[in-house]
Image 1 (cartoon, rainbow, N blue to C red):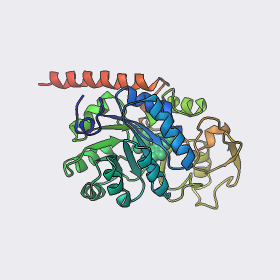
Image 2 (cartoon, protein in one colour; image 1 turned 120 degrees about the vertical axis):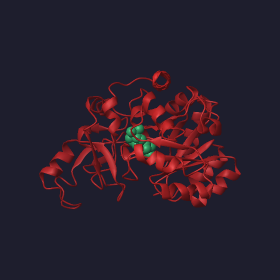
Image 3 (tube, rainbow, N blue to C red; image 1 turned 90 degrees about the vertical axis):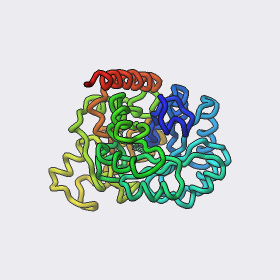
Image 4 (tube, rainbow, N blue to C red; image 1 turned 30 degrees about the vertical axis):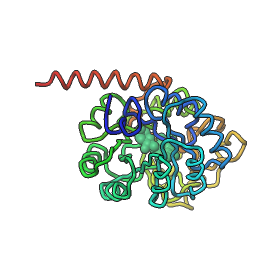
Length: 330
Ligand SMILES: Cc1cc2nc3c(=O)[nH]c(=O)nc-3n(C[C@H](O)[C@H](O)[C@H](O)COP(=O)(O)O)c2cc1C
């Protein structure tokens, strides 16, 4: 399936496995890339040594293009240099201004992507020379930059910039892929569905809660799970922490119920506090249900964990059915 995105990146299908924080890993990214999509590693918080190791491990598992995502609320200068020295095919930026990195990466033949949430930002980064944009809609899981839904965001952007625009948020199956293309997009970037892949590094209890959730069960909040990353709105599954905070009258930071309570431990035994930005990645023990359960509205379409290769095959099959359906319209 050819689009401007597949031509640009040299991939078979216009499907990106969205960076889903520490749930990403070399096996997930390489399986997606080997299946014809673009696998992504989220390396924003990794040490330099870990970044190099993870990139090299991914390269051992695939000869296909893959990407590294960096969140610009943290200093990413050294990680950008690592991407250059390790010759990473694609670097994507989120939550901040990538201007100073664009030319440097492009000089080294690395494709650059910026996530945007409105047409003004899209035009700015297109003019600065990024190769493609991810337009993140309000439906998306995890940290959410804007408040516009993809049904409006994609056409608002896609017809204004000459570069590929990829829809992130809500578009999670073959119908979503075709919808993105019809709206002017060049593909989809999928987070929550790959969080439910068998390769994603998450605790099964988290996956079970996603599987049980429907499209009404997520919650968009400005700052509830703020410890670790402040002033960053996010979408999570509704859980006991949210319900207790609502029952208490939605008090501001500092006055919230059970603030300071340790609710879980990470794989190294480090305490995870209530209202922390940690989600239950592999190895977390404790009260998983009360943690930040990042997930998008697309959870209503997800009910079981399957390998990422199958996810891609299913999307392509569903997309073919949609094309047939469109062909049958009079
Ligand atoms: C658990 C989780 C972690 C995320 N971490 C990142 C990240 O590190 N960098 C980033 O650019 N986006 C991150 N996102 C947002 C996704 O890249 C993407 O925009 C979103 O998942 C798309 O919506 P969907 O979940 O409906 O597919 C994260 C999303 C989730 C669910």
